[in-house]
Image 1 (tube, rainbow, N blue to C red):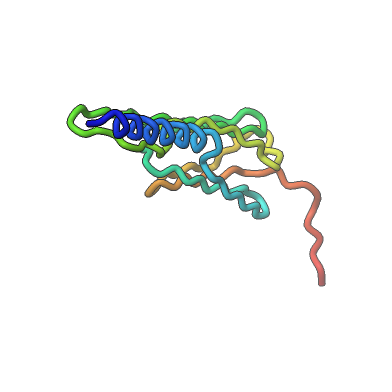
Image 2: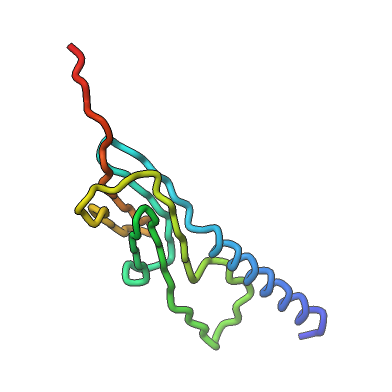
Length: 130
């Protein structure tokens, strides 16, 4: 391999690493839906397994941490590696949690999508209309 090819390959690999680091910083994308008594979060986390993911809730701060094992096989040369290997995301929830409960009603991971349901404290009183 010539010097130019070697330098180009290293440059592409470094760009891929920087791109992966950027995505690890901004990812994962999160959608939030607020119903009457629950907040549903949908988090895209493809490439991770359920055992890779750890969730914690401290007040109204949800922490999502995930780390997957990186296998660097010597039989193939990595040209570009942009998919995130680590996720460390803290999300400020726009709710108050129910008192006396741990908050998270359920957490399910299926096909790269993490769905978290959090019970919320309801303010006020419903007024029926006749």
